[in-house]
Length: 335
View: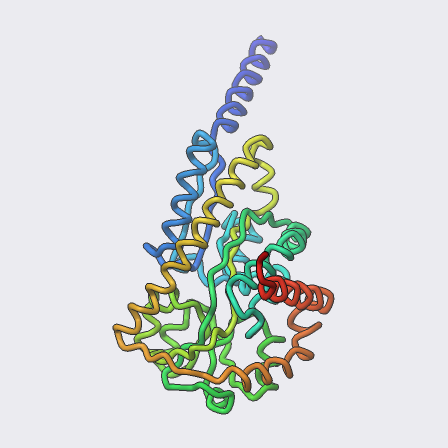
């Protein structure tokens, strides 16, 4: 009898193990992308592709619209396992590692081409920095040029000095640098931008046009400086331990699906950015001309304060070298 009971227990254990092995791996992904937006649909499409590629073994659940909190909140949930993945901006990655936000330094890139070239050059280094902190990058995406949107026309550094400027929480060194330059950064969660505009807590915010349109921020911030302020990038990252639970042979297929989705997103978002600006103009957005010279002078003076405090000095130097190389390459005529 004991032998029968032991055999039965072993059989039940084997069945339970088989059942667990058959359960899909669920990856809960958080993002600020507004529900129903192009970004949200692109992530939903990635979920459909993962289900198809894996035969239902990997399920991606997307929680959009900031339902999981700010990017800092989502990183905290990622750390404790409440989320397994996030699709966030390079600025939001500051809570993981400081290097990626260097790509969004003001006036760093003159064109999207320069920005894409620099990301391609430094992408492997950024991937390695995140992997050291146990996060796997599935893909990078270019979200385009940010502009400064304000409640009144502000086109010169002297105009902006009196404005209350939205500043991302979790980056005190950058905010100290802006204060030293005479700005008035107001530290908030990105999910609080609209109510902060409505109540007068902030006067200005830097962001990409499509986000300003989809979140209706332009209804209060009706003036946009025509000078591209900086470039914003995004990435989908997943916890390393969760990624390594996925069968090894399946991972390259899932990563390639993510990269294809990222490439499609880049093309679609650039088209939508032009559309977003046109829609906002028709709804009353004023595009104000700005002389870039005083702004470039201001930013150049800030670089010594940013190097080594906001962006690690070795990466800052490699970033500047890569940017210069990409700019020179773009300026060289094709033969």
